[in-house]
Length: 342
Image (cartoon, rainbow, N blue to C red; front, top):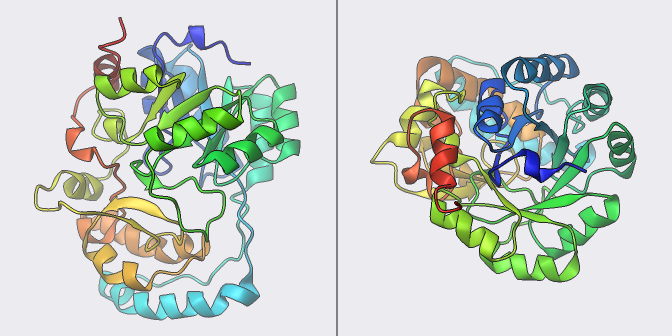
């Protein structure tokens, strides 16, 4: 199991798919935290390239995150998806893009990426969107990797422990981006990690990392005082030099007039916390729980928004403390978060 003493600061960089970069993961590890490189949405080859790049930038331990495969049911959900596509069509046309034909596959190339990680032998592999498959856990344990599983309540913590996880990431409702709920079609709870932690600690002896709204040194010291072994932070790093934020995302994330947040299925079919923009306002009321097919459907629209700098068409993932994020090197964020610990 990973020796946490190799990471002087109990600060894990959240694996932000689409935004996290090898440079960000490496910078967090180099600063004494623990960087996680996001493997979600990547092919096996792209994951291999990303891991190699992290290793070029750091000799410190780091990890990789994978999405647990999501069962899909075309017969059940095709009608829902069709209705959502019809609603999206005018926006796609206005953006100059075509909506793709659905690919009913929820695997996210999981098997290929587990095989990559068996060879890569990274210090830690984290999982989100379900308990890690037992076979994958056994194979990655044999390769020497520690297994971290994302959970959002005590029942999910028990399922992750039963699957063989070595430690847990307890994600509260304040976290930005996708909720880590084990069922994509379930409504996520609205509890923060402070409310959830006692129940999780009561049902498992596994070490717990907490996530959701961790933006300042006081949040970190509070988490450790409550029994967490570390914190996981994402939004705190979004404006850093090493992050892969698009101009459109940055414009929406920092816009003073955008003040509301919502947990929405509008972009992917899975609940995710975002700053409310025109896309959310229009499509959240009619969004359907068909993940990851909705993510495929909206991808060309989001890509058009990113290419043209249009903040109203992209997913503005953000935790509740997003206004506290500051630009600069990721190392400065790690130092600020750890300021009360020594």
